[in-house]
Image (cartoon, rainbow, N blue to C red):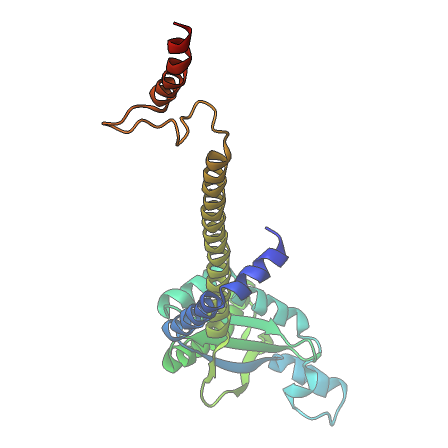
Length: 266
């Protein structure tokens, strides 16, 4: 279908075009209302080096502060292990079963060299979002404990985790609402406009057939009236009941004209 024909049809059936936009907008609004917003909660955790590392640094450099935050640089590998575990299907499924409809994301902070873990949870209610976030933060400690237990790491040499920041309350997100409402509205509009084009084509075809039939009927009538009068009796030759025909009258007139001449000869 040519686009120029489509736009012409839309302009010709402008009332149907307006109806299509109204229906598409209504469909988008219904989907937007049906889906509802989601609630997003974010937090940041960091890994803490083991006490043995801090003690070794103090021993090598007397007077060095006993602050584990000064030695975060060597924990990027441990952080990657934790992030991969949080992204695993097993952990995601466990959190999803405990908090139906909730999703959690974990990633390293690309803007920092520190062993930061960025956590985000999204759910249908603020309570579920906050609960899923808390379980994810606890999963970091669970993962560290499991791995170091398997490696039989002593307590003084164990890496730990600490919460750095967290949202005080979930924030409202309408991203899903907007996306699905836009798709529903756009899809409805496309279908409605295609149907409008088909209806316009069908109506125009019917009008053309009707006008063509009218022209054909008028031509037949004119042709019938213009046919020669061959084989058709003239008005003068028409026989009127109770009166002699034209031929009979002519024969009588000839007989009357012949009678005087024949009498004189006799």
